[in-house]
Amino acid sequence: MYSLLLAIIYISFISLGLPDSLLGSAWPIMYGELGVPMSYAGILTMLIAGCTIISSLLSDRMTRRLGAGLVTAISVMMTAAALFGFSISKSFIMLCIWGIPYGLGAGAVDAALNNYVALHYASRHMSWLHCFWGVGVSISPYIMGYSLTGGYGWNNGYRIVSILQVILTAVLFASLPLWKKRNNGNGGSEAHEKALSLPEALKIKGVKAVLIAFFCYCSLEGTAGLWASSYLVEFRGVDAETAANFASLFFLGITFGRFISGFVADRAGDKRLIRNGIAIILVGIILVGLPLKTNIAALTGLVIIGLGCAPIYPSVIHATPSNFGEDKSQAIIGIQMASAYTGSTFMPPLFGWIADNINMGLYPVYLLLLALFMLMMTEVLNKVISRSKSTVKAAD
Image 1 (cartoon, rainbow, N blue to C red):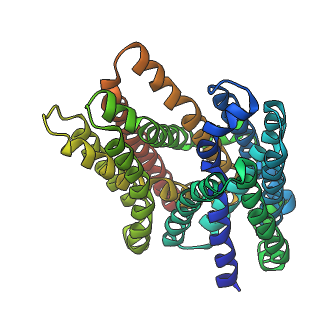
Image 2: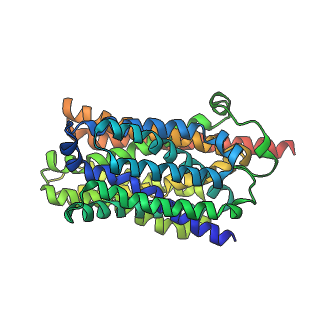
Image 3: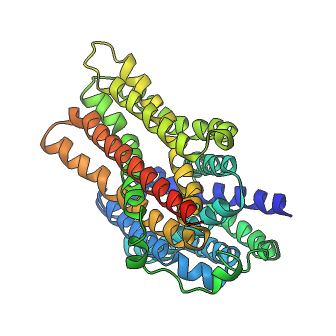
């Protein structure tokens, strides 16, 4: 039964990725038809991100009350409804209204599914699941492209993905009996305990360190992906087509890297995967920043950064129950999700301001600072957790 449920969760992770790249693919057409400035995409993404952060912070309370399965089903249903709402929207205001359930559904399902997998499945599955998220992100631009080139319009691109989400919603509701071994989000008697508040969670040793590390990781991933092409074109003098191809390879590096890391995750362990990932990122950043006449090193460095990013997100999530306890993992993973969305929402635009007002050449320096700070915080976390476990053993 667990294998069947795992297959459903894999499909759910593809579904999680499907909506994430739709707006970027469709916006060049959408903003003209809606009669708004191109910059309004930022307003919409910030609104969605804000709602996602809110639902991530509330995920512990919701999952304890409803259970991971029901939270996932309801969240996907909300996302499906929001995507259908996008498909029938005729104004930017309507997009903003539908963006609220879009964001609320995305944050809750992300936190609930990640915690469920961290509790019940091996580390390799966490890597492969996030690889499947990358598959979803990669597929949706093709869906939107098919709709646009076929003359069906961006509305039908959203409608196609909403139909896929509706089908998944039906599957998730049908699968609810499979989730019953965990009667609630954290299973067993812990489900009846009071949900952790944000101040209570922050008092737990090591939580602040992992939140900062996760913030830095998602800031780095978001900045690296968003500004790679601009850096290559404007600072390195690479032609736009080559730059775009290698920027896309950054994301393919993440997806392929997660597929590969799944084969070694159980043997290597979460801590080693995170360390090795950061080390690979640092190598990639150095290659990107080397002041060489040839651009081969910089182009290769982007791919290496993607490969280094691959194991970090799933490993940080999977290690949470072990680091902080299964009874606290849902609350802490929810806060980690909120920290992740905060970093990926605000830090890439900050570099955009730096590029406009100072120098685009600071791109590798910005990434390097984020990577070093992430490394420092993960090592602080390792020391805190190691000290805590040693104290528990001594007490026993």
